[in-house]
Image 1 (cartoon, rainbow, N blue to C red):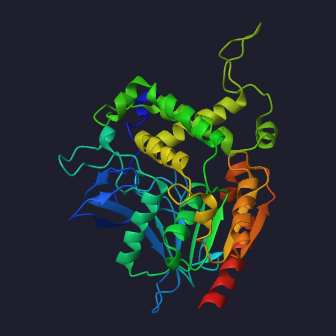
Image 2 (image 1 turned 45 degrees about the horizontal axis):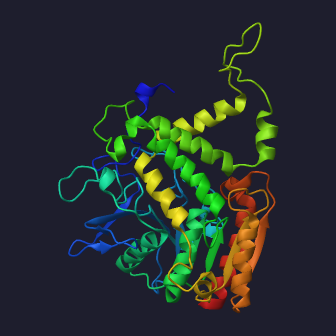
Image 3 (image 1 turned 180 degrees about the vertical axis):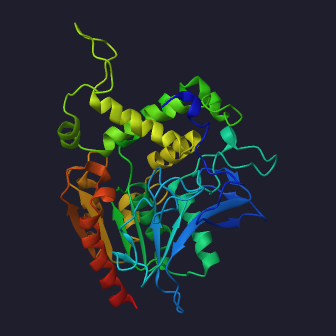
Length: 394
């Protein structure tokens, strides 16, 4: 991809086509105080919905997205919406999350870049992007913002809160922060707290961005296309992409083949000859640059590294003891980013406190991304779980 065609930010901006987004605004009369001590005013949460809320308002399901996801969990590409739904095939009529039965909501998280207030959003004081002025947010802040939207929609209790990866972190925080507002949860390929290795992956990505001179300390929005921090973001994404898949997938798909579109010298070796796997990583790095914002990538990644349900709650065991609702936790045997032992630990913590929890392991070579790719297996576990929840809690 040529630098001149890469945007300074892939964020959705006011004035862009709305697509299927809806918007909820809060903190207009007093600030929204954040977990880390910062504040935000005039906060917007972008969200999408599918299905109909029933008269008893008891059929609502909240879907929580992962790091570079957004509110567009299902649906087609459209003006203002550059990607198809990230969980297409899971949400819709007759699908595991059946919109003929459920009213489904997905928000773009606080700090995101697809309609919710984030670093690319206009600051209420001067209308310029927040940039370096945007405060640190946590998973708890994201969930508290979603709770404001729940109030706005008139949803007192979610039939279920479901999400994978960072979405699963939000799921756990919902059940701990608002135990009376959920009737079931399904955390997928996630953890109760970030480990040192998970934090290490995130720290390397942030450093790659910080060392890109075109990041400009986070205030790059006035730069011309091609002059933004696309290289730092692309490298951070390339690094993350390695953790999203398994060694088996990389070996089987790419092996040690040299890239077919690179010139091969007739004699000797060229230092900058690329392997096929490098072309794959380049593709994913450049693709993210076109649809995401570099500052949002940092902000959300930091929130994931700060994730610890036990922080300020007398530890993980005490925090998890607040979860009392039926739980389905799903792990992936080939996941190197959030290994399956972390989902098994969630189950053990819940069961030890008498909370019903089923653990299902996805048999897939695709690594962490299997919760997005092996939808047949995820759906086979999630559909019956939701059926049972509705039967037993209505």
